[in-house]
Amino acid sequence: MSEHRVWIFDLDGTLYRQTPLRLEMAARLALYYFFRPWRISELLLIREYRAAREKFFLSDRENFDRLRRKYKLEPEKIIRRWLIDGALSAVRRWRREKILRAIEEHRRSGGVVIVYSDYPVGEKLRAMGLTVDHEFWSGDPIIDCLKPDSRGLENVIERLKLLRAEILYVGDRDDRDGECARRAGVAYMDVADFERWL
Image (cartoon, rainbow, N blue to C red; front, side, top):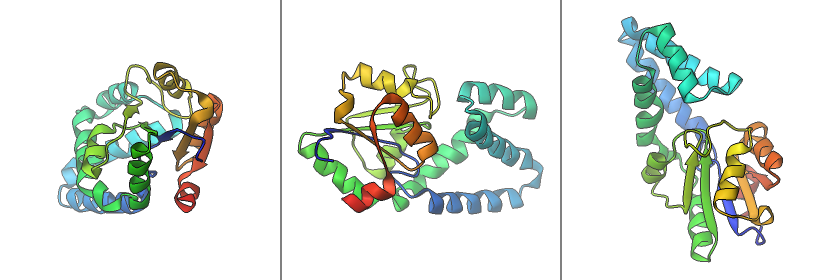
C-alpha cells in the first residue's frame, strides 16, 4: 500500500464499528417510542428512509419529499435527530482506533486522506476527533449520487487532480464501496483487510 499516496475512506462502518453503534441506537429508539406509541409513525418514517436509500438509492431530496407527503411529518428533523445528532454521542465509542492512528501517521508522512460517504461526514469526524484533508458526502453538489454510482468519486478525483494509480479506497461494503471504486478505476480494500494490514 506504500504506493498509494491518497487514501479515500468510507465513513459509516469503516472508520467506526457500525454494528454496535446500530444496536445502541436501536435500543434508544425502542425505549423512546415504547413510551410514546402515538409517535410510532416517526419510527416507521426512519425505517422507510433507510430502506429507500439501501434498495432504491434515493437521494435525500427525493426521499424527504416522498416521506413528507406520505407521513405529513418533517423528515429532515426526525432523521437529523436520530441518524445524525443521535449517532454523534455514540460514534466516538466505536471508532476504529488502529485506523485513526494510521491516518494520522499517513498524513504526517505526506499522504492525503479523504473521506467520502453517502451520509454527512463533518460532524461525525469532529465527534471522532479525526482531521482529514478533504471530506465529501452524497449531498454535496459535486457528488449528488449514492454509491455504487461512481460519478461522485470521479468528480472528486477530477476536482483534486488525483492520479488513479495513487489512490486506495477503503470501505466496508463491496457492493457499494468496492463497486464504486472499481467503476472509477481505483484500487479497493475491505476495511477488515486494511486493519489487518496495518
